[in-house]
Amino acid sequence: MNSNLEIYRQFSAPFRYPGLGLIEELSNFKAQLELSHPGALPELEKYVGHMLVRDQTQREEIFLKTFEVQAICHLEIGYVLFGEDYKRGLFLASMKEEHRRRGHDCGLELPDHLSNVLDLFSCLDDEELVKDIAELALIPAVRSMLSAFDEKRIRDRIASLKKKHEAIVQEELNYGNPYRHALGALLMVLDHDFPGVPEQHRGLAGNNFIPIRDFKDGELPMCAIACPSVEMAQGD
Image 1 (cartoon, helix red, strand yellow):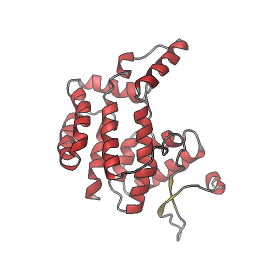
Image 2 (cartoon, rainbow, N blue to C red):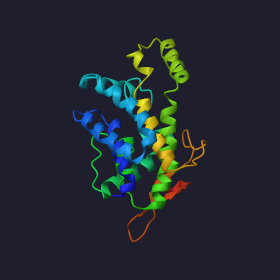
Image 3 (tube, helix red, strand yellow):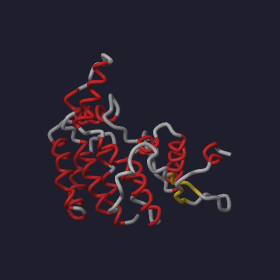
């Protein structure tokens, strides 16, 4: 494992369904973040502080409300980057293969789930691939996720739901949501480690980045491509 990327494995904890060991994980995580990226610690502590004063049931409710039931944002990076475009399928398939090659268990989440991608990212030793995934996938996706917590966007979304006469589930959790701070801390660390990524690398299919493999002796070693061919997309 690249020791410089170890902090990203620890960042996966907030974005997994909260288990009974979450608080202990967060305690260890804070200690490591203070050593590696102290500037991001105050932002993470806002998230941790919120979790500390909640019981297990409340932590689970917050997670479900934020990411699944009338979700504020989604944690599947491929979906955030590409929506329903075919490129999402390519991205997902490539992530699945990379997890398989490293013996990663993705659990109940998809291979492109933020927590799983952060776990994978922390194990990579190809510097070019690390840079590509950070700058063309992780940073744009996390920016997009974080923007979903903008209060105006949340007000507009709630107004739209009410106009459709849909019941709002735990409306208070839309505002001051602690996961905004977890994402904010992650983005601060990414921006510190990979500076200078322009703002236009955000939004659906904004960068067309797909980690995929080149044919070589029946193997497909990892590389990054910007524009996959139509034949590749169609599986020909």
